[in-house]
Length: 428
RNA sequence: CGGGGUAUAGUGUAACGGCUAACAUACAUGAUUCGGGUUCAUGUGAUUCUGGGUUCGAAUCCCAGUACCCCGACCA
Figure 1 (cartoon, rainbow, N blue to C red):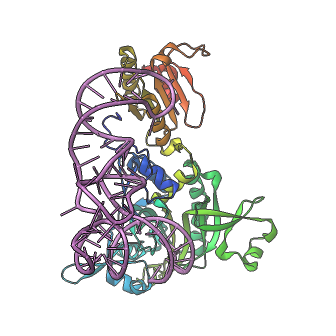
Figure 2: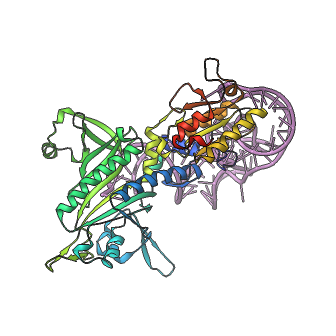
Figure 3: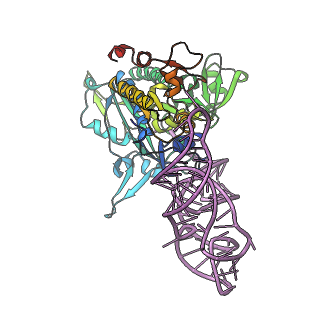
C-alpha cells in the first residue's frame, strides 16, 4: 500500500482526553478512531492488525476442531430470562424498538449457542463439540477506561465446548490451556503472559485467566517465579495457596491485564435450556460445557501497551499491519526509480509493504512516522543508501533496520527478498 | 453510581467581564530544504459543548444538562 493513498494521517500531538499509552499511539498512528468512551472504529492500519490477530486465533481454534459460526448480536429477551440474567446481569444492554419489544445486545453468547445446538444435537455420538466465533460484544461498563483495554463495544473470540463426561471436558480444558499459551506466544507477549488461577465469577467454581504483566493493568496477580504459577489477588488466600503448593513469601505481586480466560461452565447453561443427549444405554443426561474467551481489541491494546517505546509501537511481526515499511527519501530521479522498482518487487512477491512514497515530506518526519507506526522492519531508499554507507562493504542498495535496532545496514534487493521470503527470492 | 477535573478551528493550546476570539500544528498554494518532525510567504478553517440566568456587554461569572478524562465502586 502506498502511504500517499492512505486516508489516515499521523498526529504529532496526542489527544487531550487520552492518558493511556495504547490509546495515544493507536490514535496518533491512525490505527483507530474513538467514537465514544470505550468504543472505537478500526481504520485501515488498525483493521489490518485486528485481522492478523483474528487469523492467528482462528488458526488455533480450528486446530483443536473448533467450528466457526457468527451468532447474532440481537438476542431474545426470553432466553435471558430463562437463565435469570435479564435482571441478573448489570452490564447487559437492553434495547427496545418502537413496538416496545425488548432485546439484549449480546455481551456473551451462552443464551444463543445453547438453544441453537438444541435443534441439532441429541445423541452422545454428536459430542464433543467446539463452537466459536469472533464478534463484537456489548457491555455496559460503568466506567470504560484505559483506551482499548476496557470497552463498551469490543471484539471477542468466544468458544463454547460441549461434552458428555467430566473427563472429556478436563482433557479439552487442558488442551485449551496450551492453545492459549501458544496464541499469546505467537503474538509476541508469551514471555509476559501467565496462566493465572482465578475465581469462577458467576459461572463456576474455578477458572484460569491469562494475564499479561503491565503496570497499566487493573488486575493484581501473584507469581511464583520458580514454577511460573500465578494466582489472582481475588483467590489469594491460605486455602488456595495450600492447594497450589505455594509459599506466600515467595510470591511476587504484579499488575496485569487479563487478555483471556477459560471457564468450566458445568451445566449452568445447558440445564436452563435442557440441552441433553441420549447415552448408549438410552439414558438422558445434561450436557457439560466450557467457555473460552479472548478479547481481541483488548489484546491489541495490551500489545501496544507492553511492546512500545517513547517513539511509538513495536509490533511483533505476526500481527504488524505490514511486514516492511519502505521509505523513499528525496526526489532524485534514480532514487525514485529504484524505490518504485523495489516496491513493485516486494508486491510481486506477496510481501506486505507500506510504501512511504510521499513527496515533500522530510526524512525526519518519515522516520518519526515509521517509528510511531511500528512496522518491525524499515527499508530506506535514498541517494545515500544507493551510494552505500561509508562503513559498509556491501556497496549501495537498501538500508534496512529493525524497529528495535539503533543502526541499519545496506543490503541488495535480492538480500531483502531472501530475508522476507526465502523460498521465492529467485523471482527478482 | 460517589468524588475530582475538563469542554474554544481536524488536533494541541491561549485570551482581565470590554476591539474583528489569538498561537502552533494540520490542510491549500508557491518557493526553499532533503538522513531524525527544514525554513519562509500567502490562504482556508470557530454558532467558544447545549440550554437558561446575571450584566449596557459573557469564551470568561452563576445554575442545569450532556460528553470526555482520572480515582473509587463494579466488571463471564
